[in-house]
Each structure stands twice: as C-alpha cells, then as structure tokens.
Image 1 (tube, rainbow, N blue to C red):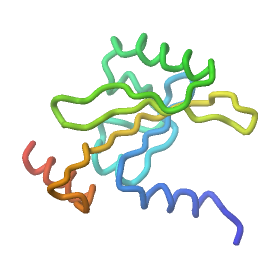
Image 2 (image 1 turned 90 degrees about the vertical axis):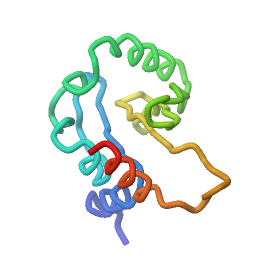
Image 3 (image 1 turned 120 degrees about the vertical axis):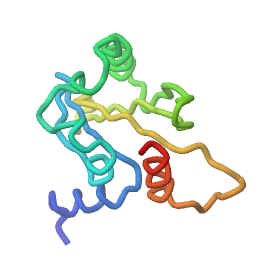
Image 4 (image 1 turned 135 degrees about the vertical axis):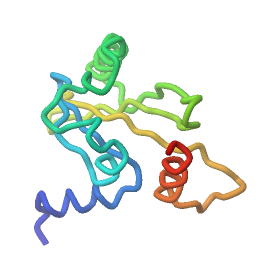
Length: 131
C-alpha cells in the first residue's frame, strides 16, 4: 500500500486531539478533523495564527522556534489552569532536519479515576459546560 495524502489525513483525523499545523510564517496550513470541530471558524486555514492567538504570544512562539532550531524537540509550554490541559510546542522538521513549522499539542491530564476515558468525550463534555 502506498501512503498517500488521503491516508495521512485519515490517520491525523483519527487522532483524538486537535492538530493545527502552522508554517514558519505563522500561517495555518492544516487542521485535522478534531481541530476543525473544536475551533470552528476561530481558526482558518490560510490565515495567520495571530488571528486567533493574541499577538503578545508571538515572542513566546519565536523563542520556541529558536530552541527548535537549536535542536530541541517537543517542549512543555504550560499547564492551562482554565482547561486543565498540559500544552506542548511541537516543531515539525523536513527530511533534512530543518524546522518547517509547528503545532501545539494539548493533552488532558491523566486521571487514575478514569484512565480509559475517551478524549473525544472529554471535549464534548467540556464544550457542553461552556455553552
């Protein structure tokens, strides 16, 4: 089987967490199904990340990119007090090791009370609470 764009997209759509890939110019280039569901029209492919992120986050992102250029891989950003998620900056490299973009990875903190809980159910519950 040849791995095509459609297969890769299906793999990324099967991932329960959102993936918003952003290039070095901070332009949103790809969103998986979960990201489209979670962010709706707040994040749009082809637009600047800073249309949905506060411009004050630019220096923080630039520092992460400098660290990535120096060779670091996934980097912990913050424990989000509002959502309870751990957030990570993930550089994406081409076959030569050059950073071509990045995405932010979110994960719900693991819980002993419900270790097998579905991430998708987690997001649906969270969205219902916000409505």
